[in-house]
Image (tube, rainbow, N blue to C red; front, top):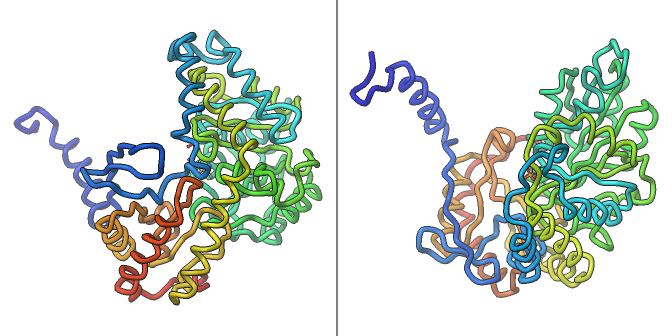
Length: 419
Ligand SMILES: Cc1ncc(COP(=O)(O)O)c(C=O)c1O
């Protein structure tokens, strides 16, 4: 029976049930409309000016005048849209230039642009170990992944037509066990810097495990590139694996976080990149990035290299935050991380939401992260630092946390989350 506005009753009921179950579990997501204020990390949300401690703009480049100039210059001469997919008419000289810069930056032979990191990740499992990955392959391939991998890596495995297993977070021995039991060609997927916990995987051990099994190792360094390592080249630099391209043969990076733009890439050996160019459905069947975005991203990579003081200031903020939080007696709720991603575990979704709302009323934008983004019982405040933050803004954050957190600490932490 249609309702008065003509919508069939079954459709209305199906949608209402879904939304109501999310509401009842405190999992209904609300998006905010954010307007950037000036060049710093401040923004306007519903008329209130907030210091943004939730963005992934780690180096403070998203508002940089030179990225804006690079973008507008190319938009003026080449227009806005790329006009097609890379294999048809969408590939422009700006894309090639950016790919060359990214290959050099990551110390890899070649790089291939994708429109988003999600799409780059989706390609990896299917291209390397999915059905048809190699001619005549009769056994289905295997993908193993860290239990805390980003959703796009999980989807990469799930949608690839392979057998998928998850190992305990950052546990190379558990990964080796899964791989030893696996059949067919194998691939191990791991975040480089875990996006919700801020910690790193044991990359050298994982590389050794993969080498022993002849399994591919793919590292998603969306959050580490530009930020971690002596020259900011990410987790491979931290692990001493920059100079050994076959130990971590697939590196995925994004351009919408530290580099201040948008898009993503895969870097590796020339033939690896060629295989993705030929076989990745999420590369072939989609519109190429706007060339102006590629130009802005190239400027972001250039500035990340040329202005190391951004990374140094960022690290100083993170170090002071952890030191002061320990002084406030809150270290037990802080996950071990020396990266710009700092998570304070509150447990329940309600507690995380209440703390986030209280911080917002004090002029601070700090996201509450809830299941299914993180495991049940580990809802948290996720604080991200940017080189654009000032010491005074950090002072405000520390004072607010001191005032707000004690009232939210009544829930017991789930096992495995006591610091
Ligand atoms: C670890 C990780 N990988 C991949 C992605 C997806 O990248 P993109 O936003 O470019 O789709 C994200 C988040 O955006 C991420 O946090």
